[in-house]
Image (cartoon, one colour):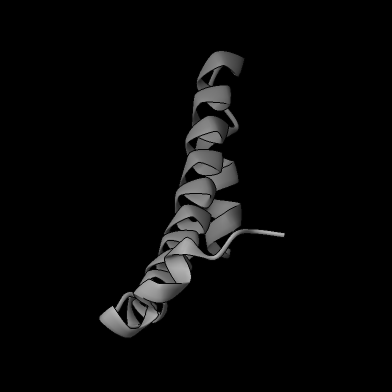
Length: 66
């Protein structure tokens, strides 16, 4: 029996509200994992943009937008 089947067998006898809690928790874990991936991407972006913040580039701060 694989792990998913073990989880199913463990929650099968539980009442519906408790099964809903288990499902909500599983969905929360998935969402947290996806958020962690997004945080990693945002950190990578922030570190690459840090190179643009230097004295030589200050002149571009006053250029009007299109």
